[in-house]
Length: 113
Length: 112
Image (cartoon, rainbow over the protein chains, first blue to last red):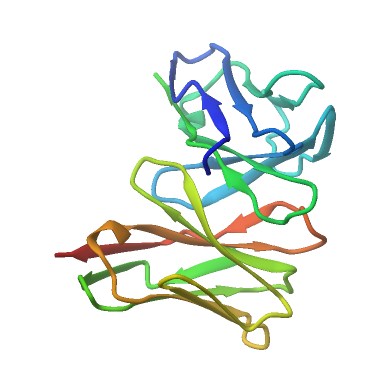
């Protein structure tokens, strides 16, 4: 998973605040996926983006969550008005166009107080 | 319900022993991938096996896929303490590039 950068690694927010999670895939990997992992659980898919386009957002909650992957810069997962239930590890994965393998970043651990 | 479910949930073995983890899934897949996650860390990709493949090897890892039984197994031979981690199988259902569906994982503990 070397090469996929996520920041911050740890994020603490109070209820009602906004959380912004960033993911920078390695060069040439224009496909980005966001997953959420609750304690003692496997990862759950949230959204799939490919440079400026949302390909599949079937796993995204309908409210408060949004994602983007601009032409320049990292992919951003934004959570507005966070609640305690949003506390989880959020992982970004990246993929090149010619492979099925997804490479994961180290994750951002969000804690909502 | 889970698409992929690993079995057992937890496994404890001694160094040098082999570890076998199983994964079952419900619907047809394009490929199946195994990942390792050390406590509190990100996921490391181990191996990908396609629906038309039956077995793949990578170092001490051996993965099998039985599409008729909708199951896969991951074998780690001659385990080491450093193999202690959680292991997840993830399935890709449709065309290449679709999102992965993860199971809850098997927690492997290797004691020296």
